[in-house]
Amino acid sequence: MSAENIKLIPKLSLLSVVVFGLAYMAPGIVMSIFGVISSTSDGSAPTAFALATAAMLLTALSYAKMAKIFPTSGSAYVYARRLLDSRVGFLVGWAILLDYLFLPTVAWLFQSFYLAAQFPAIPVWAWLALNAGLTTIINVTGIVLTDRVNKILTLLVVTLIGIFIAYCLAYLGGNPPASFTEPFWNSATTVSGIAAAAAIAAYAFLGFDAVSTLSEETKDASRNIPRAILLTVLVGGIIFVVVSYIMQLVHPGGDFEEAATAAYAMQVLVGGQFYANIANMLFIVGGFASGLAIQASTSRLLYVMGRDGVLPRRLFGRLNPRTKTPIFNLVLVGAIAALAMNISLELATSCINFGAFLAFATVNLCVIAYFIRSRRQGTKLPVIGYIILPVLGAAVDIYLLTQLSPMAIIIGCIWIGLGMVYLVFLTKGFRREPPEMRLQDQQSERIQAQHPAPGTLSTVPAASQAQPTEI
Image (cartoon, rainbow, N blue to C red; front, side):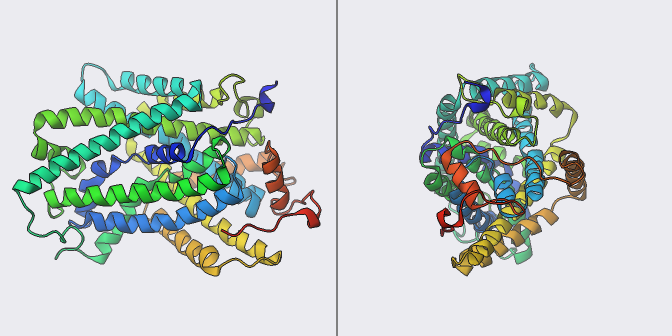
């Protein structure tokens, strides 16, 4: 069997995909950014996280709708291509590529910095090589091993969060807070402060969309992927709100000696230095799951774009016959980590945010486009679910995009400009369509026939086309 004919195998359950999404988001991030969120919101961190959860749920609903209609890997890239325009789909995929290529690097770099701080005898570059290398080996082995390691490490992180909460509750037992409602709203809280903090907190949700890249490796994808997307945001949001509420009780107000290390200082306060050091180390190890999930989803996006011919197919669009994994893509993503030593975390993070929020806004627009198409075919879909909520979701995403630093926006625009140049090359000066989708199963062929990209013709007679799906 040739490499081009090998398919991704559906082996993942709903639980596996939800755990994957949570690992991608990294539940422990609530502790890492608590100080910044609390400081920005003047001591109302749980309210900021709750607002961010509600805002991200708007976009999650749109992703769930699209994942049910298009149960194939590729995420926003596929949705935009099928519902907006093939060229728009390409540029969305290009924007997501910026996000996904930098995400593994940032995850590994964060781990390497913390490990080097705790074990200074080993340099950062060595930890970086170890993290990237070990992650790549596990992902190359296959999705089943990745799933098992992912579950174990995510369970470790959730357990550590539970232990930390227990220490906090024990501390509060001896030092009862003056008020149990102040973490949500206090005398210093303002609407503008909450909004600004929620915009920062929204970054903690980046990655829930990556669940859709596993559609072709998930059992009953049209049912489980939409559920997994919503569950990932809901479970993640609940964890963020509960943990930040208890941390805010331990430390009322938003004043910290160093907001970036507030969680570590709080661990020392409630459990002592020894506990803080052990917990810090275990959180770092648990964070390995995030890099594992991020690299896996990035390789799948590259695979879909390669399979379509948008990227060189012989390199990017091939699966290993034995492991059924895109080995070239996984190795490439691991190799890109070498660039991490020459860029700042701020720069890499900015690139991630630009690509993510642009993709989020586009998916909301795709839902609106689907509504319009359905109306033209005679199917009426609910206005609230397909117009009002997506419009609100797109507005939130665009607002978050405008909150990025000027440098982030400049870099993002340059990246999109490079994508435009490549698109001109692929289409011979826009004289032809970008390479078309080559979805490889009967369900995918049916989807493509029912939802051809704007400007293309369906090969299925109108009488045999199914009606648009209502969700």
